[in-house]
Each structure stands twice: as structure tokens, then as C-alpha cells.
Picture 1 (spheres, rainbow, N blue to C red):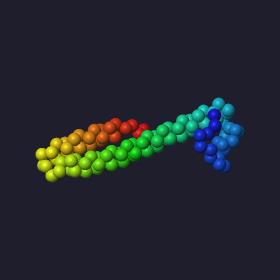
Picture 2: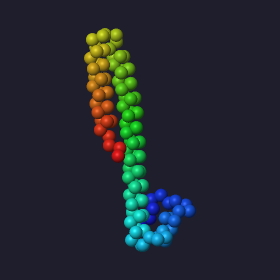
Picture 3: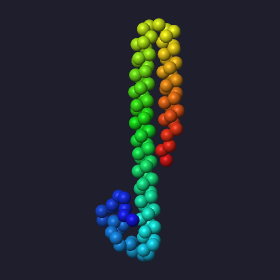
Picture 4: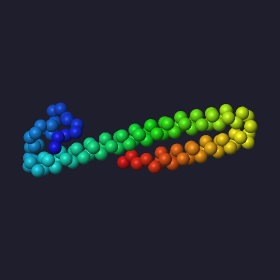
Length: 103
């Protein structure tokens, strides 16, 4: 099994097992290293996705808030109704974002 991220000058980049390791131990070490790197890549990707969704939710909440104010045309009752919808969206977006699993 090859390394996912080659390390120049490292003993693990060659096909030779590290000194003192048997062939099976060398394979097990490479597999464990690759598993750790793969898990880290998955975690980083999930964290980036959570950040993107959070940024989109913030933008949409601001857009909805401005649109609610525009649509109410100064009517306080209509503004209260539209702000309720904005609040409901904000709570929904927050619930979805908090449900992301990063690790």
C-alpha cells in the first residue's frame, strides 16, 4: 500500500521497510498511516462544508431580513409576521448547521 501523502526524505516513502520492521509490520504501519491521513482529509472536508453552509445561512438570513423589511412597507403588523418567518428560517438553519458531524 502506498502512502497517500509522500514525504520526501522519509524512510516510509521507499519500498523498503523501515529498519527493524518485518514486512508485515511495515505494511500494517503504512495502512495505519493511510487511515489516519484519510480520516484527517474527511474531517477537514466536513469542516469546510460546515463553514460554507454557515456562510450561506448567514447571507440568506440577512437577505430575508432585508426583504421582510422591504415587503412590510412600514406596516408594523406585517413586519412582525415577516420577522417571524425570518426567525423560523434562522432557527432551522442553526439546527441544520449544528447537526453537521465534523469528526
